[in-house]
Image (cartoon, rainbow, N blue to C red; front, side, top):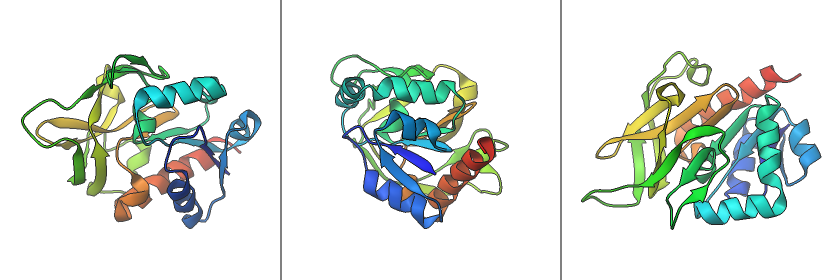
Length: 205
């Protein structure tokens, strides 16, 4: 079973349906016990960073997500959920994140269209990473106005190009994140989500 964290913000339905289409059980939940009992945990997110962190703190789910990560459960952040994994964001002020990955989230700056929206090609920075096993780079779907700057180069698994290199996939140990929406990103998005689920199934009996 894959737990999808319900903290009041996120594309819960589309993510749960995507997991179910892989033939796996998806449970949308805010229960600490159910989250910690799952084989893997997905932290979705749509909206503003500060609002999301406030919801997580008010529900106590920030501590649950940190506990899950510390216990070694495979954890995947999607879109805003990926950004929440970092230490802080400058979106509408400075906001503290979950701090699972060192780095910060900043606004796109330049004379080009924001938000970054549409299909862009992934560049695998670490092709041998387990998430990419059997996969080739391709296009996935992005919608975001802020992007993550990982502090450690080794946490950067894939990038895309939008007038600059942009963080697309991050990961360290059991914690990973995708800036794009894998459930809306065609065959490659589905394949990446499947690889996360497979890794989760192998990590916890």
